[in-house]
Length: 350
Image (cartoon, rainbow, N blue to C red; front, side, top):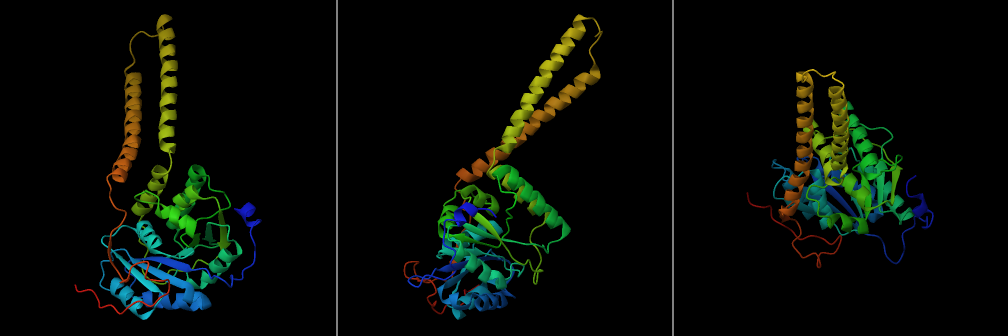
């Protein structure tokens, strides 16, 4: 298990300290999930048990185009004192919406999960107990002995894992999933990151090595359809490669070095062949092949550098990761204590 050295120096008791109970946050990005959010909140409340009074649930509506998701979040926030809601101005994707929820969270430990019941609330007690048993960990990540994704998604997950091992030195026995519990110091570090389009497994691996897995069940999708198309998965893979790694630039440098060495060797061979009189006239095929290969290498190098330049421009342009359009909180963060009842709020006029 990863992080054993840290675990061995921390107490293993799962009893909560009597003087100060931990505050727990759960952050869920939501997209077109208004129809089943009441069921999801009910399940979370049931499985939170006696920790419910020290828990907040932050639901982040990622600018859902339907007319159900945000009204459902508003209604739940009025009815349930532990529910808070954020509505984003425009759709930013799961990872950025998750970052918005993390920034709004106040718990000492923050659980991240999905809104489709594949990360089921019945697994929450395992994360709570693991956090109490291993307070030295920064991230405790769910591991699925059996995944319920389709074949293409599972193949993409395996590729994703290999890239993490190569680019971020991820331990081979560690798995990364979207169901995890994070310590407050790590959450503050992630929120303070200046990456515009974060890939969460990558930035977690970049910012801590205090990681471990716990085995949980991966449930079948109960509602909705996956928002991860093939193009979106490719974009995540490219983000993981370019956002936090210089491997492509190094690969291009090595390619340029290899081409230069090959060119010197071929030039020497051509000179000695001419000197010995074995070359009578220039070779058209050789010339075409060399021009094609060198031109392709130059274009590849420019493309890789352009990818980095484009990301730098976006990063430095001041583009926000997200914009909060509205919130169910009507008091300031100082006044709004964790778990305090929220005032009645009329639905937003449309």
